[in-house]
Amino acid sequence: MKQAPFPISPELTAIAIAYRNPASALIADEVMPRQRTPVATKEFKYNVFNLPEAFTVPDTRVGRKGSPNEVGWSAEELTSSVEDFGLDDPIPQDDIDQGRAQGLNVQGESVEFIMNLLHLDREVRVAAVAQNAANYAASNIQALSGTDKFSDAASDPVKILLDALDTPIVRPNIMNLGQSVWTTLRTHPKVIKAIYPNGDGSGTINRKQLADILELEAIHVGTSFVNNARRGQDPTFVRTWGAHVSLHYRDKMATSKRGITWGLTVPYGKPVAGSQPDSKIGLRGGQRVRAGESVRELVTAPQAGFLIQNAI
Image (cartoon, rainbow, N blue to C red; front, side, top):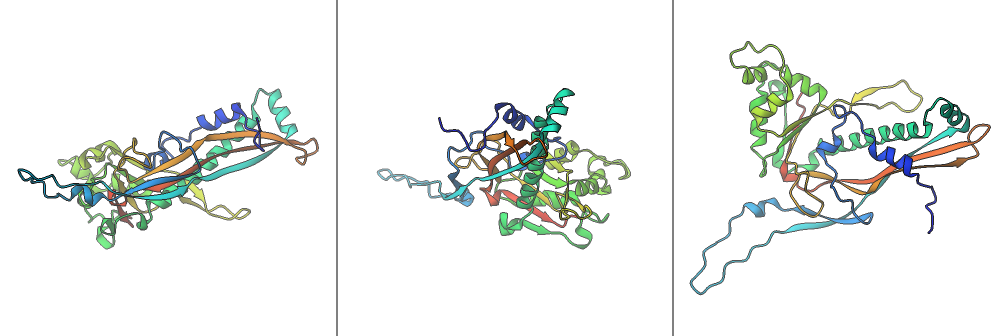
């Protein structure tokens, strides 16, 4: 059997598959969930559904000797392909030997470090997709300004959110936003009064309370930072999720071919990891550790989402 040019290690691959960032920090897998069955080839076909057809009622009357009118559920079939995302970490043999003497799996820790960076990169990609107006129907976008911004005490966030949720053909069931927007929402006096009508509007609320009054399954808050500075420069940390709010209809059982969901992620295979000797590392050589995955983020039902821009 022909071996891959870069040997894959079952042990390191198991670490790559099992590694997860804190759920409170990264929300990409909730916003654009991975379909459960990976595609068999890197190039694949997927459907973008024409939702208005499901709400257009044809003539259903049937004459005594006539035939019923025919209907069809159409979708535009497009072709896409997964992308490979991976990183290498060259480790001197001295580091590996000294780590082993202390009971440490240096190569395993390297895989975790790489997967952390890959997951953060995915978070940046998904945030960019979810906050891009091009991925929504034109009628499902609202840019806030002046006293409508949630950061203005005179605004009415609950009314704005309820109106937004009622706009798409399929009502969204999740809300996605960054930590800064969430902090503004949970301390907004009118939001607090909506939940505690007999209070004075001070204090805070939690996600479940707001999700309940908005009739949402979940509210996802991205808390991660990313360094936008070039390598070697002083770090410039910015929030991965900015000042926008996205509302999506999400079906975790949907795939690239079946089911309605605003967006999803199509994987090819599972995350992989491995290592191979590299004589150019340090005095005694070392191991070059590699980890990565192959995925594609897709928006399959733009009409099933709503984007609120510049919420704060």
